[in-house]
Image (cartoon, rainbow, N blue to C red; front, side):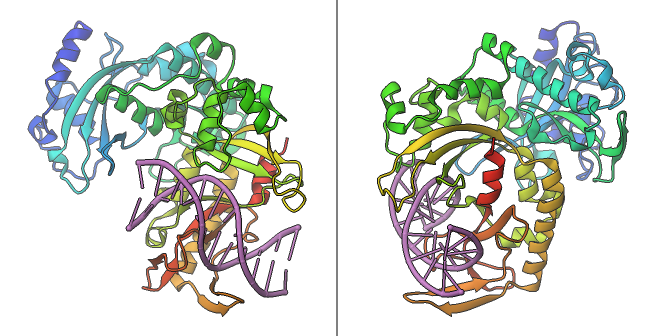
Length: 460
DNA sequence: GCATGATCATGC
DNA sequence: GCATGATCATGC
């Protein structure tokens, strides 16, 4: 059946709300628990009644609307998230470089998306997943400006012969995500002999999560930039410009010019500082639209007079059982650094603590950073495998008596293992332990980036 | 002064 | 009670 108008199509799509895939499926496809694309195909065939295709134009080509069936999940705290990124069309490295954004394969196929969200529930059968919302998505103009910048970045890399260095966290909303059975799905690229992973355009999981929450929960986030500003400069440049007037000023000075409450000890300090400087005092950082969609995480860095942070930078605690079981491609550490961008907010001290215990922080600047693909593929990968072997062999624990305490030494990778990252404790106290796969207990450990690596990242 | 292990403080 | 960001303590 051909839908003549958008209204007709949307009206039909909304009739699927509340239905399960088992109810929709007419050809017994739903019994196949393995084939990944099948839920979309069931909707295409059994609900809309058209033949599954992989054409360049959108599914409902007369209306230029592309159909996407995509999962959402409920978090422990009750909020909703997109379960995955939304994978769009595969990038043809030889063709995409000949287009402009408006003639690109991305835009041709995906300018209007009919999104059908279903609720994914762990261990539930696919037949029982329920469609909860059908929604026609048109990219808001502010989003589209950033997406266009993202597309230019991706195509720019291909044109520079760097398709093999494409990485998801390079861009903000639109990404080039890996697509293929495994990492051996390699393709040729036009300006370099090196083979590149097959990739597809995708909307980041963070972008989709923000979308889900605005559609279903009617969440409204705060924008830090308007269309006019974004048209003139990238998000990165815009951030630089917002922060640059305060560079080299002490926090006391900055406080006088903003509504900032200076309490550097406060846990909300970074939050208050950044929102004051962005001109949106009182807004929490996770309520900022651009950062939520691009999955930008904030980290504070405090430099000593020698230009190096005194402390390493900590991340999530390690789940050793999970680390042992997962393979590299599905591992937390790979996915986290591939998909997360960081906004480092950098401060420095003029004097050492010894010299002046009441020394004051000064603002040095910001750095928008994501881990480069080469580091992820080499150092981080090796680190992952090494730790896996250690866990497999059983981590060695040895009690050592010190002056006033007893410590437990271990053979986990230290800061000198690869000069990038290491494992160190992060716990309440020495009784705050987790079980290792072999049954031993170890003080909770976290993943850390070395302070020397951080120092290099933020070096001008 | 660095490397490594331990712990504090706060918010939810 | 726990996760997270931040910082301390000891030995070399």
